[in-house]
Length: 85
Image (cartoon, rainbow, N blue to C red):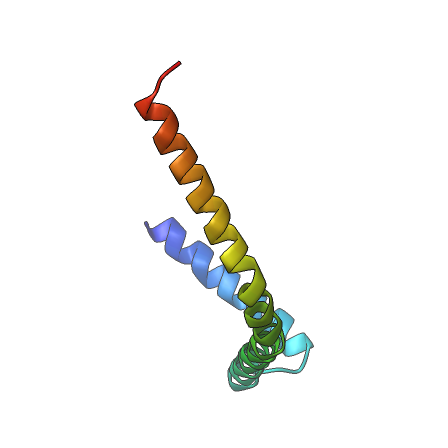
């Protein structure tokens, strides 16, 4: 347990030295993470906004075809179970 704590402290020291070499601090790193997360959320929202229109447009044609195909297979399978060959 004590060895694990010493490993964590040494890892924190090494990471701190590396971050200091890049001239950053904890607040700057936190701001960078938050900004990048916000960019990911914004990009995802733009992608959904752009693609959502096309998905809904295609669904107007695809979903009825899939539903008709499902119903045909359902009634075909149901009919074949009543009259086994």
